[in-house]
Length: 541
Image 1 (tube, one colour):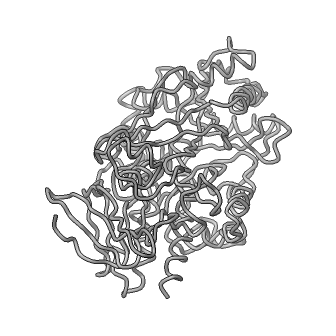
Image 2 (cartoon, rainbow, N blue to C red):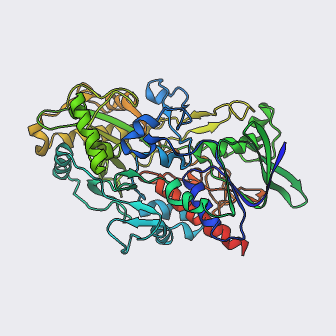
Image 3 (cartoon, rainbow, N blue to C red):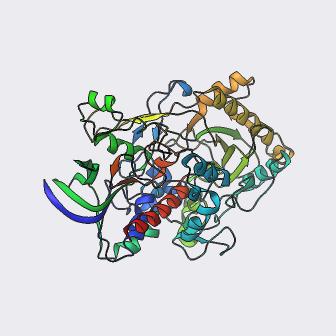
């Protein structure tokens, strides 16, 4: 095993959080930082063209190609589970939607951790710090930061009609989802720069890569953390990893920062002997720290993809149906960086309540002027739109567990979707709310016809069954290394993101969320990294 050097900080994973950490920690030239990424460079053309997400998901060049275990809540189906495999991580293959969630999400984190610094009013400045908002600086937005937030570069007649229909169904129009209350319906803001994807590798890592105190190693696979026993307890000394046909050992003088994501971070912890001791011992791994919560508490947003055939309005299905149409789409992007190739996977959003008992919206819509059976399949040959709706606050909990002591073996991902009565009830209500919107007068002239799941599903039990048949992940896994109070047996890190009973080790990514945010999870993960960087640098002074 060859020495890879000694650094002040080692960051494992160059995804959303890792890129932010690398930037913030290397601003001090005295900090020597090593960033290790298992994937490659973000130099694949389709990463940067927004519609290219269709070619990045389930592509071994850009995606880890994970799959879930067979899920009873989904009619026994397994799902593909995309995770980014390049610099920028999942920000290089995601939907580019800028979304913070609701103020109540962060106030709940503060209550659960006993740390008021996680409350909305305290984290809002961190969101603003990195933001470069299209509307300029204001009470809830920042300007001049690295994270570009722009308006979408096209609209669709059918989406405008859906927005009108939502208003008629009691979901008012809004202009901004990110002020702490995301009620209403609007086009999403997106992380783009003039029609090109803006990932965290461009925003944070490229500027930092010019600094001599940052070392970036791609194509390097972390085998395990180096955990040593001392008189003061367990200490993380660094990492062992492979890359370039060699085995490496790198040492961290100050801290090792695990930023491998909600799937990768618990996997690495378990491989390193940090997790449920009995399960690790059964796999031939010597337990170092017994932390039963590692890999548990998996939460995700299950989107229910309702598809409606229509007449009288263009959709991507029809525009891309001929070579002439595809050529026009290509020329529009080549000349103006606009048109369908510039669009995020979902353009129109809405936040609503499944019933009047909800204090804040618990449903999120991603509405698309297209339809297909599943990712990777061709568009349908008829004009249609998709209204995907998800339960923002699922009560179902899953887990991520290693299947063997082989670090290259994918872990077992078990989301347990729709495994609680509450989630099944909300799913059924979500389909009913969608039908109410589509039945509103604003859409009548387009003669919407329900193609999926089908009007023969009517009762609550039938609708819950239908939800399991059309549901799929919207790629928001969180919670598998959750933060919590010291007396919480299921917590993995404290409110400063330090791993319990291990010195010199933090987890900084979406896995630390105790509860999933009420919306897309990429920018909340970015905020977590901003906050972690502040705490890390405060400790070192």
